[in-house]
Length: 427
Image (cartoon, rainbow, N blue to C red; front, side, top):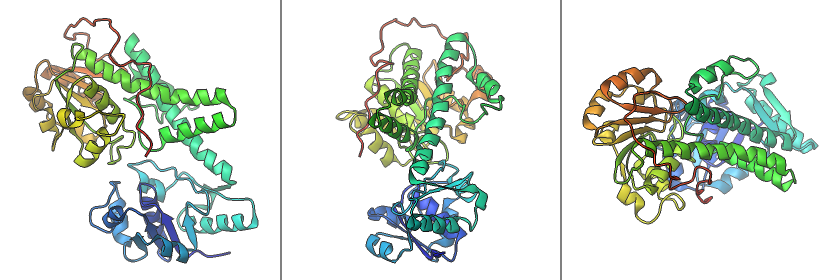
């Protein structure tokens, strides 16, 4: 069997960088070169400050970089000398979760390798299997044809996104009836046929994969004349959009039907904790809806750079003209963001948000002081927060029956809960 000694990975992003770093660590006899046309990104991979944040990644890179792991912009030479080129030889879809990518790579549920059912294709499949067998048990390495591997990737993310949209749809029902979506999720999650994973109600899923892969599945079904199947999966995206708009509407309603010229602290901008990735983050859409209503946003995230937040919010379809410069301030810490705010909105489930000094925050906020918890990170603190004086709103639960009264106008909100939000153009 052909033995692989040199690997080239095209693309030094969230998948290529961590995946090939782990391959280099687990296969010290293989030279791994990650190439990209983005020179600044490659420079960052070769510096002490990596271009992406992922727990454990820096340690892996520093252990291998310069030994058998290299980052380069010299794409042609890397391809020429490689025995295997990722993305152009086989279908080897990743099943990584940001925030746990290194753990997932070192101890995967499965490795899926698809290839052509030809002698050449099968030789390539077996050669890549041999690479993974350095640390992955053979029974966890699955080989399929190319279509099966590609559809497995789309279907896996579609099923996970479907579970999130399903529990989010139930969260709306819980708020209307007085049920607690966490209790409902616990009850149904104990059913072994269902399981308890991905039943966390929130302001909606984000990240690069879920929406992209579900929409790819929708497109594929439409192209193959399966409109009913396409419509079914489109509903997963529609519920996600609805959940974001519904949460933004609750913020506006809670603040007496207007947020114009009010200061709102946005805590968290990454699409989930333990990553600096903001792609399709619900925070972008919540910020958009609040900016459209004239709110002044003070945003804090421990891992997302100021420049990235500005770029995301300045994207056509998210904001217009000078909206960002006039309405958005990036704060250096959560206390600064909350100082003088009418409301605190939690959009990312960073653990640090559970440990903030909320008595200090409450003293510096305008009264009545509101917290809108879009990630259910403060569930164990509701009594304490109410004792301090906060009005609390959260996903899928009525927290307090003693809310400061207000009279909803009954008018249709300025943005419709039914209309899909403006999508960012694909770049």
